[in-house]
Image (cartoon, rainbow, N blue to C red; front, side, top):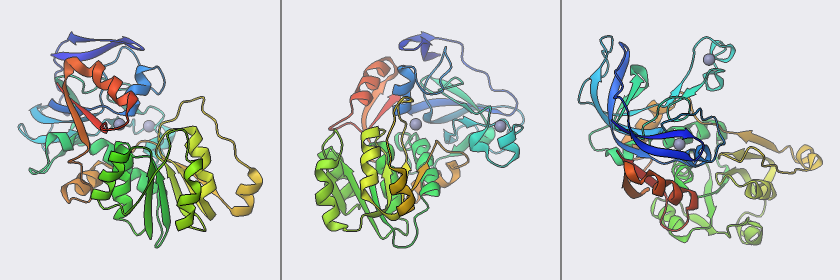
Length: 341
Ligand SMILES: [Zn+2]
Ligand SMILES: [Zn+2]
């Protein structure tokens, strides 16, 4: 089969490699769509948890082509998506019911072969059926939706909370829709790209603000005019430490700052401990997801999350490099790029 194959950081080619054979408890999935994530860009550049050599790709959808002899819940021909994450079930955190922090955490496309390939194998309990009315293009976005579901668990909006979200990338747009369906009192999104703000409006987000790319300070006055006490929850979904630091300026007393993005490992923000103490501010991180796929599939099936307009480009496997460049640059007209192996 053909696959994107990284020898090491930044060095990949499209290669012919052996098609994987499913073990007794595994499913073989023929990949129709695999979307590019900012994580793929970070891995390409050598950060995040990637182990090389590597086949990237963790946001996938396809058709079941074969099942191992112990698999009873999934059938050949099923249209599915796959949870890329794996847990060991035996380490300290797994035993203490915190599998997200599994010390032997694995992920397809990072520590195991991923879906930028014609086929992938997966444990049967990580394979989820898509509804008939959900396309493979939408289906591959179940993984970012699952991460947004976990984000919602961490944000935990209370009745009437005023929420401000920075960022309008794929996961930001998904998170905005989930927030809009939560019990938050108001949801505002601030981002630099006009067309993405227009899309957010189409998706039901009533309050949007266009901000400049290098931080939001210039727009603070305009946003706070409508929210004179600030926000109960401010979410940074940009991955920019500048924005994460600026976000503190928008918190109400007792407010929570949620860091919901992948940052450069050496990125730093500075805070005033006095300000945090006096205002009882809290900082909350949201990392990946674990066991959120069933709820993500449900939200997609029921139209709580609309993914139809998120796919802005579709490319063949051979153009993975081009897709990666587009994802890194982002901006006008680029939300999710889907590779079709
Ligand atoms: Zn992802
Ligand atoms: Zn574990």
